[in-house]
Length: 354
Image (tube, helix red, strand yellow):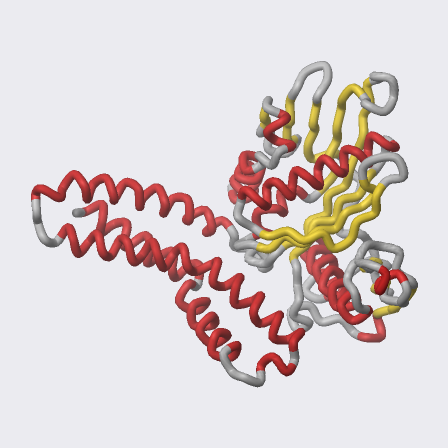
């Protein structure tokens, strides 16, 4: 069958483009290392290896299963049994649809697109409404993560005095999480009747920063002399043991002025490592934006600025969510706030590839 042979060729090409064989070899190497009895002598390193292995497994398994099914179908087709023709055609159609879905991964060619993502949400102008809007966005991304089969972890969260959140930092783990979510980086704007201000129409803003999660220090090397590390009493979640020790960590990158503070983990070391991972992501993002070759060349600045909004969420006098860059829009605003943002992601990816 010509279509079946063509699908096999397309899958082979995708394997090369995505480096599936290389990723599979690295996965096997990690699995062998994790099976060694001494690996858990360094629990932090072992946990990092396990996480890397899980991410690689997520990236290759769907492709390996698709290739297996297509190859088995090709063997079945070689039997030349006319009674199987209709069944084979039906299975081929299903496999072609699965390939088209997986093929979307070919869009992710950026240096950090296959990394997990760090999202930092910050309430802007709009007072309580802005903090409530920021919490709505937090839930939107958590719901999207759940529907995508990804994992989310809140790393840092500062609640508003009355409602909503001032800031929320979350880690999103899944195949090409950063590649997909980079579409969300920027200012988001909400227009609605305020539930906090006698039904008046309010406009509020929130900033969404999307950063690649970079756990490996060798990926983004930062000179020790460029770091200022402060330790202070944690006031966040985590229980009494957190609140009675100086476990919170604030790291400042002196050349750029970028500051990251983490206090949710139970130990100072865990907070320090998480803060460094986020800082590496911020510096990597800034390097891409400033188009420089090294961290040393970076100019002072933030990874995301309070510029023009990238997306408008209008709940009054009509309902519409519209992206200002791609013009993609959705009228079912409730569905969008429940995590239906794939249309915006796909429209953005298509726009940057053309």
